[in-house]
Amino acid sequence: MNNEKYRKQLIKLLQNCCVPSDSLHFSAIVVMKDGNEFYGVNVKNSVFRDAIYAEQSAIGQAITSGYKKGDFEKIYLMVGSDKVGDLKYLDRAVITEFFEGECEVCCMNLFGQEVILPVDNLYSSVFNY
Image 1 (cartoon, rainbow, N blue to C red):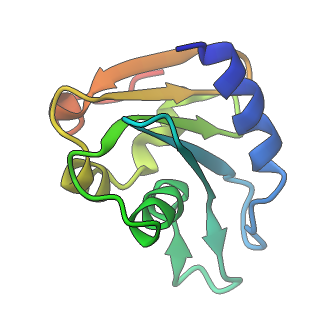
Image 2 (image 1 turned 30 degrees about the horizontal axis):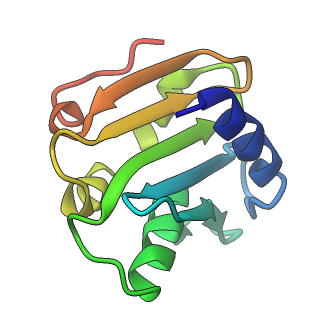
């Protein structure tokens, strides 16, 4: 897969984030085994209490479209900063619920730095970037 293509798409998606209370912007692209793609951004309210994570949004669209666990191939996530480590905020539980263990999670920042992990390693990996 062409990570540069996805990096450019993720950067464009960051413009759609709704985060009135802070500056942490996240975008996601879920790629299905049949090649279809679903997009998501984070959505927060102004009192910090509730939030929709970018990966929850993208995975939710796939599920709404009829996909099931086992249909997911890869997820690309971007943080709208220079710190890939800000992806420590990602929802590991929802990713591991729908992606099989060998599927890849590609985490990126705005400047091309990326970390690729298998889903099986999401809980054991600590982002130190």
